[in-house]
Image: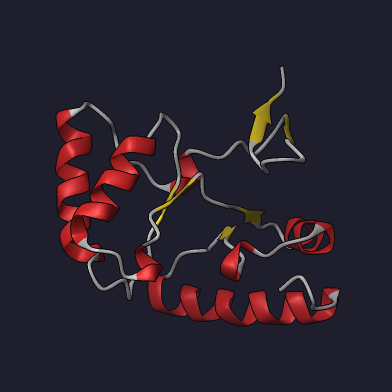
Length: 137
């Protein structure tokens, strides 16, 4: 996505926006760039069309097809309040690992919420090194 010009970005996002809306009757507002590849042009273009770009703070590495225990250990070792964990729908061991991760999170009193509840929509800045939002007063 970072190699596309502004019009190409808008066209791609708006095409998928309409498909999601048609399937769910909801207006999507979040966008995770494929491979996490982004630049200022992409972020600014997304903001122009009322989208919030998001990244993750923990990569489960499920896309590398590690075994179930590796995924569980990786996520539970790195979890923290407000974490956004990246999983893939085609990860070989993701479904079984996710069952155990969700059970672990519940046992440890974490609450799983939609990403939209984790992002600041007003009064924030972005850490240029990590891409994390920082709440401003």
